[in-house]
Structures are given as C-alpha cells and as structure tokens.
Length: 145
Image (tube, rainbow, N blue to C red; front, top):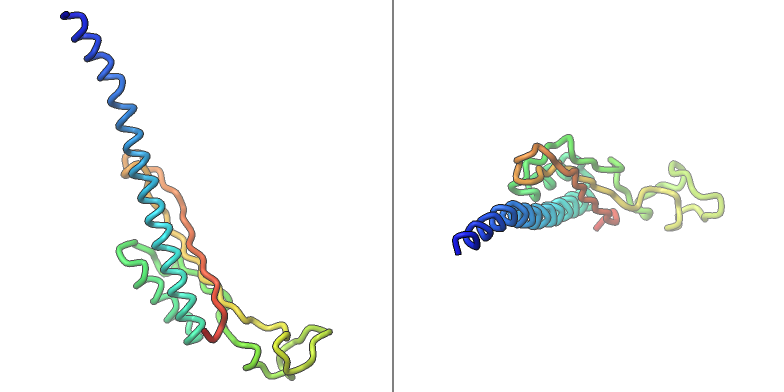
C-alpha cells in the first residue's frame, strides 16, 4: 500500500507540469485569437474613417481608439495610400488612364480602395519566457464608403 501511494505521487509529479503547459497553451492561443480579432476590427474602423474622410490622421486615431486596451502605437498603423479618391472624382486631364480606358469613365487607373494595416507584438506564455508573436490586422475598403 505504501508503495502505491509513492507511485501515485511520482505519476502526479510527472503529469502536472505537462497539464500546466497544455492549459497555458490553450490560454495563449485563445488570447492570440482575441487580439487578432481586435486588430482586424481596429483596422476595419481605420479603413472606414479613411474612406469617408480622406484624413490619414483621423484614420490612425480611429485605429488607436478601436484597439481599446491593446497598447498599439501610432507607428504600428499604416494607411495606404495617403490619398483616397473615387474614380468619379478624377479629372481625366490629370489622372493617368489605362490606354484602353475612355477618359472620364470608372475604369481609370486611380486609387479606389484604401488599405489599413495594424501590427502588434503579443507576448506568449503569459510573459514567462519573454516570447512574443507579431500579429497583423488588415482591412481594405472602397473609397467614398
């Protein structure tokens, strides 16, 4: 009987660290998925603001506000291009058109979408090992809403 208790204690001592790592991995994966969803939503909000206002500063501010509790820095937000125009706003004399395009038509070669990309380094393993994973949220939206 005494040997059985000792064997159970050894098995428990071997099993607990493995179970702890599995639970920690599940928590980290869940957190990564939550942060990824937050980054995508923040990028979408930034793209929406840029498409409607054509203001890169307002788009970056919208991303930072939408990121909420994530400490996203302004340098981690990229708005491309920095000018959002619809084809109907184009002046055929100043916008280079596709050789096959008719001037003044919607198929002119100008920026019709805006892309907002947000990057963030998410710490892994609850910060125990100092590891991190870079996550990126990207959104593309048509100019003018």
